[in-house]
Length: 434
Image: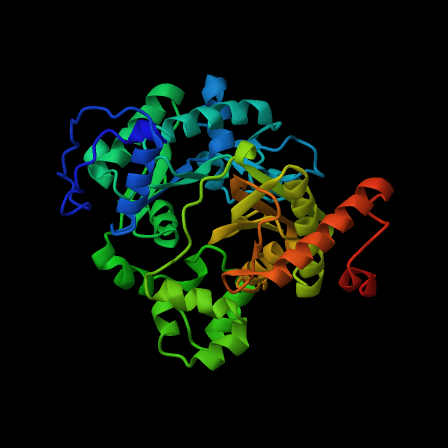
């Protein structure tokens, strides 16, 4: 991260100003002192979050590698009628072809389309190149999918310029080095940054300053909110809730009855706020586990049970590697392949399955479950090495002897599992449900 710390001058008085000049200071040598300085300074600064989404990524890569396909409808996913569309070029979208659509249906809508197989190795190659570019502009990059990421730009305007300048440089560098385009949104939080990037597709740039956050949020149709499914839209429409602003005129109890705890998330969005942090985690810096269901489901008990199974696997791997994490990330993929992630960070690292499950369950309870899901997963990041028998953080903050007792129980379960397999010992809640 230290490569970003080239100047310790205070931030520009208006970080949203398009004319804020980058500071040409003397580079500082790498060091923990500078990293800690930036971490502390950022706590008092206004948040600036950038969301980047590569335009029709798979299809654009195919058009890049096969010039004869440029300007033509390209549908990635193969030609078998049993397959599904992984991506569609903008030319194919004009015919109503969309991701997750069955191939046979895409052929009916666009018979002249060019159907090509998925080449994941090539997409990953270009995705890695894009992420390398992004990491030059912020020490905190959260890659949420192969073609999508968040950057925390808070406190970096003296180094790279205003948010708009940073966005334009990123777009220019991606185009120059990959010949691909992207859409970028900038806002005070992740929710509005994603909304902004989706507002001006393709090859777009949209900025929502903090002073306009609440007004913009309240004007948004609920159906355009990331993570909101059709069934939730239908339930809200029965309450005559069409925009996020309408939520603020309805009693909280009525909203909770209609959409459950997801109402709290929607009410936060309606105020133009979103407390979720941009969390930098990579395969090398996180431990994760996920499972694809045999049948898509939105049954909370089924999701909860599988979540516990995945958390137990992550907990075992953490303790085996003597690691503790400070960030828990819940991952869900809907039946239409839309990916949903929710993260939470806490002050003290943990390797306790009980603690991780408590945080993860809270994240799951805040998700809109009106649509069915095909996958659930969990990741823990923000690692530190364990040092002896340090006490565990309980779910309400602070350390407890009870937490340490649970850790000893979990370590004993780990030993039994290692010797006799996963079926040798299970939690009672899982046995009862079988």
